[in-house]
Length: 273
Image (cartoon, rainbow, N blue to C red; front, top):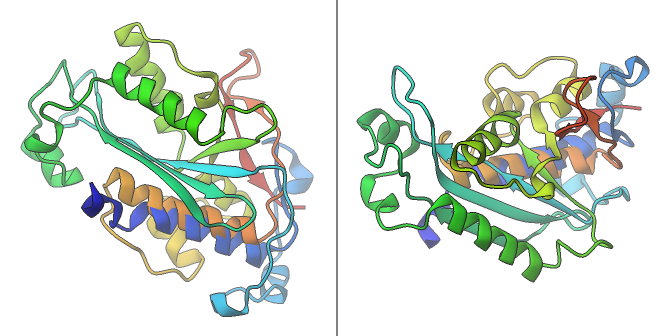
């Protein structure tokens, strides 16, 4: 268990968000589609010391979330793609919204049932071998343990405000609800809202990170950490991004339905003031 936790991508994401947040000054997580919030000048970036060392970055602006929950699934895959895909790695990093320190980690592998044998393509892409998923809990069991972990960490307390952070919408808009629907499992309410780090970055920086975390690394002058396709690794990379953008002043968020005609799920994005 300890070895996967040392892979770098998930911590990197958190660091990246934190760095961007410090650099960008006092900005907000707000509803998508509000034009006056959708740009930031390069002069303002420079004025806030973009590219300065972390040692020079001292304080975090106050904001509404007590915790950011950085998440990145890995799933069964092949070329051409197999259907249905199934989650095989389920990692969450609990990031303190005030100190930007990792306070707790949830990490479990999940045994696929529809396609129980991992393909060579999947193993090469994710680094997950067959022995890592054989005999592991089912998705239903893992979701029950996630709920237990959330309760133990105080994240189900109505007075504690937390939000999931993902690099894209796929994890919580497509993968988890799709597999739960296939298996006839309910989706907990806390999985129905999240911050899409790609949208946060694009609104703040004025460009879309086509290559995800790799582009966000370059834009924020960060060195990529760990394996690109590792769930806990990408959590750590997203953690770096979360931390960096939070330092820049990301303060509040408001939910926006994915479609104007539908009440949810909710998606959050970063917009600058």
